[in-house]
Length: 111
Image 1 (spheres, rainbow, N blue to C red):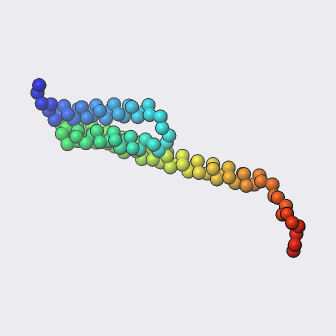
Image 2: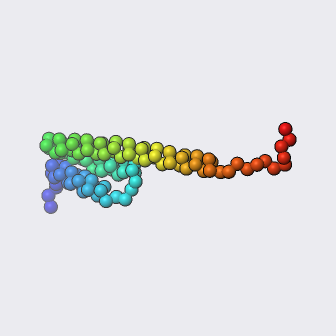
Image 3: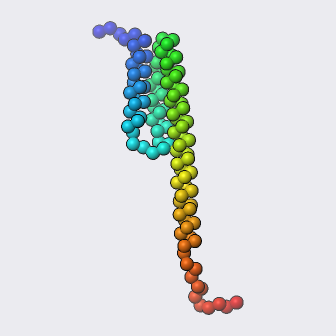
């Protein structure tokens, strides 16, 4: 059995990144939860950028750019979702406070 060449290792890493990238479409998670997953997929590209040919390195840079854009987009989506949740909770609390009837004081008015 021969030792795999650096180009073959880089190709395998690119294939691994693509498989992880496709798997991310099937993860059941809310906005902002994919950031860690995308960061893990980026680690699959590290050996390819070191060992790959110049064409593979260009492809790795494009894959890293896609991963970075996905991380930034998912982070922004998560922050927006959290902001929306917080706003909805505050509105619900405010409606509850406004809906409470005013109770008269017991014991009479001693002013």
